[in-house]
Image (cartoon, rainbow, N blue to C red; front, top):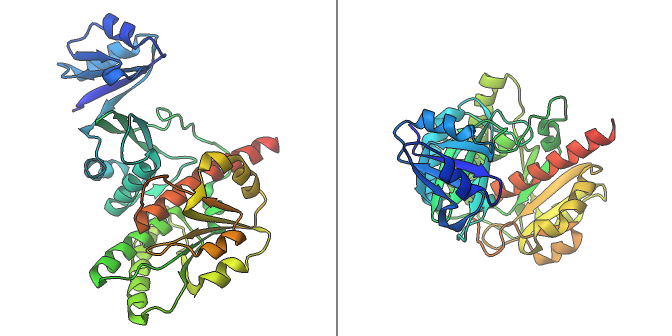
Length: 351
């Protein structure tokens, strides 16, 4: 049963819609002052209310919220965990519309909830052609979640257009290994492995910047391999195809510094620019790059001397410190979004 209905209207028409809507619900136009929005709560008949709402021409679209929680990252993750079963065996994406000020970004919510779903069920992230979307509508201190069709989230299926499967095969992730307590490393490594395999990343490099404890590194490698293999085996059952991510260990200085000019190298660190500043330039480079190399740090971060060898240095979430696995998921989510646009433009340009 829904806990609320979130309706989007033309800007300035939310109060009108709330007034003309004759349904046995608690109806609020422009909740918390946010225009273009109408909230329905405590409805006697949710289906009837939804039907009546869509009869109003000023309403653009509406969503029956399956979970209503506080706009708190941990609460959102718990809600996503409960909704994950609806995404079993499906290609999915997470989309967040955030209204108000929060200690997290929409991108961070997408990454955290995407990772939560992947840890719960056998599903695959697909930002270009998802079967379902985990939609998150945040209104001030409240959040509304539901599994919806791609059309609600403005994601029309790209029939006949290139898939991201091929794109991610040429993606190489170079990341400083996180070494710490054994149990923490094992859990983090498994999550990293699942994220890598779900996106279909071609190769993951444990980028060493200094001498490390061999046993601790071996523990992390085993955990990443275990996480990737568990997801790979599920992919074989559901899709009957797939290739497990390649894992290697190398000196980060040489791994990044010796890259070909045909490779696109992106370093993710707080000193970088925002994605809005470089988005168009990255998309242009993506279309002609042989490989995409993504460089992420961990506890110490990427050596600053390598910034000179990067094509772009990007701050994933300005003002927010992301955990190791969340930064990885957020980087892949961002690259997938940019690649979708790059592939779309290439396809349209060839017509």
